[in-house]
Image 1 (spheres, rainbow, N blue to C red):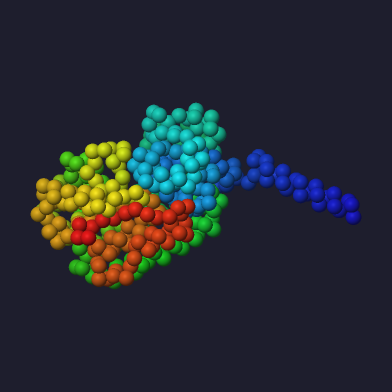
Image 2: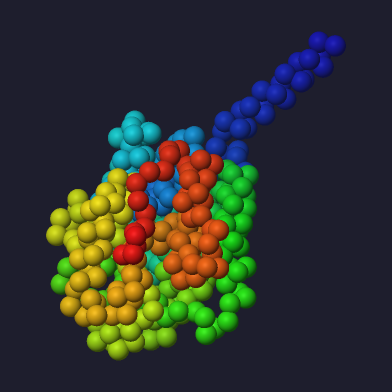
Length: 379
């Protein structure tokens, strides 16, 4: 009897030691969004985010402590969405204080030595920067240092890549069940729009012009999206995207004269709280700390720019601004819902994007929603 007890205890001890010993852990092989097969010796626990705004995707998967396995990032969340950063900072002050700013992975301020010194075991990059990462030799250098790189995508082709990106992150963070729950929510909310739009006749789809970062440069117009990102959001919401009809690719500069000649049915622009990093912006400062009165005034000023004030969409109050950062997060279904309500108010009279956004925060975010994420000239 004692012999059996000793054998059982010995096996239990060996099992614990196996779990505790990284050398004995099972390797993890994943295929990233660039189609690269990447093998990690174990589930990563010291991750660097190539962009701080990747926290939009990490948070729903690890709501209790989204920074548990994150050791550093690029500081773009702090610079370009300070409202969201302050929400994270308030909820996790110690975690955000210890994060290392590694800088841009594609610039001279990014140090391979710093990556090694901080014992990083994974760098996550954005698919849109795959060419830069290859051109600079970043992947090769990190591979030589024993630090794997994986690519995700919520910006380049988010409606195609959000689900596989969340599945990949769920695997890396060992939060597969949480990823599945988020994806179920994502699909259900997307279907509330796409199931209706697919039945709309083509001649009922309005022509929409989307100004990327309207007012970022007060003297400049215009940059817009092609049939990707917000351009694709417009199409899924039941609109004809101006940029998709003018050029192929992700985004491009277009002439104001061309927009005036097209006289689109609906004008859209993106905005976020860029004022802290760029005080001169004329954009709407949408986000968690937004001031609705200030944003209404800012949208009105954008509508009164030369060339805009006489457009049909402005005259009819069909000019709107929406949170820029939806373009780089798995929450873009919120933007698609709101676009659908603007483009087809009768067909989507019962759709409530505010309620969807509140439910997203209640079920998947470590803080509650507040602030303003869209504004309309007619409201």
